[in-house]
Every structure is written in structure tokens, then in C-alpha cells.
Length: 471
Image (tube, rainbow, N blue to C red):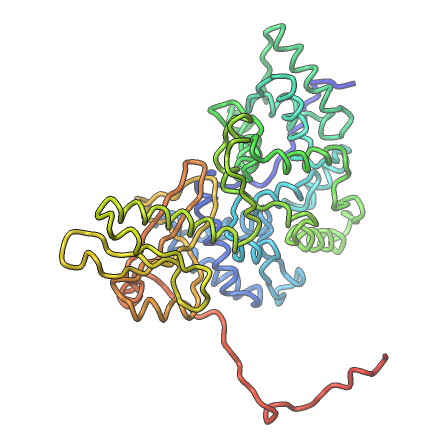
């Protein structure tokens, strides 16, 4: 029987604001990818040093940098893992980090984080996990919460952050999975009818103590694009129903990592627990390939309008690139046509042609004697919930260009531009960077070669393996 008053504080690692997380995720991924694999000591030193340029001066202290590295990028988001708990361990980028660098889909990254999140977990000290285990807590909280939100939607009930905190995330019966989502909704409906409002409250503590860990957990669901937060109200994103249902179907399943299998009474047991948790959480879930975020899903609409919208199957970086190119192609046609309708035919989509080094051939279409000069545009697209702030002095982003694209940038100079397209909840934001070659020479952008081609002949071959051995 569900007892709403049976409250229990179960927290996750404290993160940053939603906007900060959306901004910093690419920075974390880039740094980790650049310096790993490497020994733990070198990783700690280089991560901290490289992160400084992404943070305001007053945040560049060691304690803050360490928190970003260990607590947020490491434990909260599982962006890297170490080969052991020893000081000479090798640190590697996680599968989740590598996938994000490949597809530039930030909501998909957070979907995978939320899907693998559970209580108890190994994010904080083993003693905390042991306490949670002793209280018989065993839940995949995001799966359970999305099931509750689905039932609320069907019952035409809008839940608030406060409701979610009190009735779900801070309730021991829920955390122990003794209460069903239907019982939770029944209690909420009963209290609503009796005009009773309940909130998490801890005697002697400020309200922030009660709500911060709850709000942050809900924020990660919004970064995953699965819910819509409107002031204090939280509802399902109707354009992500397939993924929401996938989560909700798992509401009563056991946590995927069995924390109780480890001996917390010994140092070795606690070390093994932490090591195995880090390895587990840094790997992708077995359904991560289903978490791709469509552009339409980033624009929450009503169910009726949703059916009328053009469907998207943005499931990988190629499709994301196609949608970005299509958007810029249409934009350029309108821009050029508004300047001179005769020139509109000179806007050509060339993204399907390999090796050119640009996606769209357009024209300058600006007053002056260069109006008909050819303009070459390379489109790079990404998805995130929040829009980047061009006025931020600490904001950074990263993108990959091919050798052909860099050669084209060098050849065409002022007439070559990179259009960075952000598909977000607020719409589409496009940042234009003209003459990347000149910006590189002026130190305004950093360009790092990431791959090397190795050409070899028989002269370089030392041996040929006998593959029939053991056959």
C-alpha cells in the first residue's frame, strides 16, 4: 500500500545549471578525446588545464576544475573510465563520449545517461551506496517517473516539479518499488480533489536542500528531450512518445547494475565496486541506437499538429547533416532570391558529391561589384535542447572538418564559410564563420589534425600470420 508520507532523501551528484551542462558537454568530450588514452595523473593535469579556457576566471580554481572532471564528466555522465583504481591506471574515453563526438546529438547522450541511471549507484562514495542498499532501495528512477508522467497524461493531470519530488523521487515506497505508478497517480488525484498540496520538507534545512537534487534529475530528462518543463509544470514531450514508452516499459525492472553483489566491509570490495560501476556506467546501453533525436522532436507541439509535420528519421550523423544542409540550402535560396531573383538558380546543393570540400555553392548576393562571386558553404549540424549564447565570453564549441574541407577553405579564403547549425527547442540557430583559414592564422580558431594516413608496401611487412592455426 502506497504511503505518500514515507519520505526518503535519495540524491545524485550535484551538477551544474541546465544551460551550463548543454554548453560544457562538447568541451568535456573534446578534452577527453584529445588527451586519452593516458595515465591518470596526466589526465587529471591536462583535463584541468584545458578546461580553464571554457570557464570564467573566478571558476578556474583547482577545486572547481576537479569537480568538473571527477564528479560531472566522470561520475555523473560516465564520459571516461580508468583501467583500475591505481595511480598508474590508464584513462580511456567512454563509448558514450565517442558516440556523441560521432553524431553530435546531445539529447541522445542524455537519454542514454537517464536510461542507465539507478538507485543505488556508484556515483558517490561506497558508503552512500551501502546506505541506500540497506534501505532496500532498488529502482531505475527515470523509467518509473516517465511511467508516472504517462499515466498522468492519460488522466489529464499535470504534475509539478514539487509533485514529482514528493510523490516519486523522495518517496521510499516508490524507491523500493513497493508502490505502483497507478497508486501514485491515485494519491495525487485524491489530494488534488481535496485541494491538498504536499511538498518535500526537511526540518532545519533551507528549501534548496529539498528541491535541488529533484530539480536536477528532472532537468536531465529535459536535456534528454523527453519532458517539457513549463515554469513548475512537467509533461511528456509528445514528439518523443516512442522513446518515452521504451523507458516506461522498464519502470518495474531491476537496476541493471547489481550493487548488492559487492562487499562493502573491505577496502578491496569497495574499490572493486567503484571500478566495476565506472566501467558499467561508461558503456552505452543496449538500446542506445534507438535514442536518435529527430529535429521535429526538438520542437514540442500538440499531438494533432505533430501528425501534420514532416516526419524525420534523423538516426545518424549523415541524416543530421542532410537536414542541416537542406535548411541552409533553403535559406540561401531565399536570401539570394530576395537580393536578385535571377541569381537564385546559382544556389546549388552539392552535399552528395564527395570530395568537393563544401556542401552548398551559393553567391555573395550583397551590394557591390562582388554580388555574383561564388560563395562556398560547408554545413555542420548539431542538436541540443538549449540554444548557445553568442554573447557568452566562455562559450566554446567544436566540430570536425575533413582534409578536403580544409583544403577548400584555404583555396577559397573569404568566399568559404562554415555554417554551424544548432537545432534546439527554441528553433534553429546558425553561426557563420567566414574565412576559416584566416581565423586559424589569427588564432581565433584551433585546428588539430586527428588522423594520419599510412601508406605501405611489402617492404614494411615484418611477418604474415598463419591464420590456419587452431582452425
